[in-house]
Length: 68
Image (tube, rainbow, N blue to C red; front, top):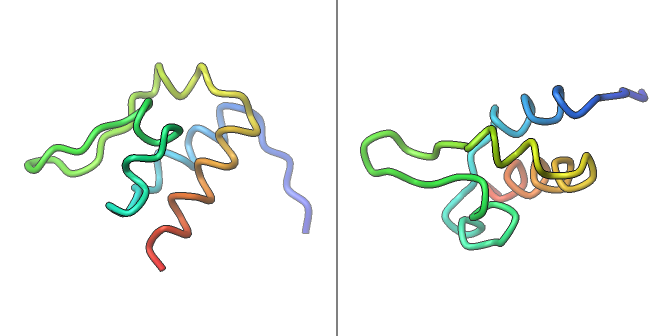
C-alpha cells in the first residue's frame, strides 16, 4: 500500500505519538517538544512546521519505534 501524506498530515501523525524516555534527548525530538510531569509529552506544533517532510517522517518512526 502506498500512502501520500502532505506536511500537515505528517505533523498530525507525529502529534499522535509520544517518545519514550530513551529518545527524548534526540535532537529531532528535543527541539520540538517537552516533557512535563503533570501533562506528559507535549509537541510544539510551531516548531514541527519548521521541519521538512523527511524530518517529520523520521521523527514519527523514531517515536513510534521507541516503545519497543
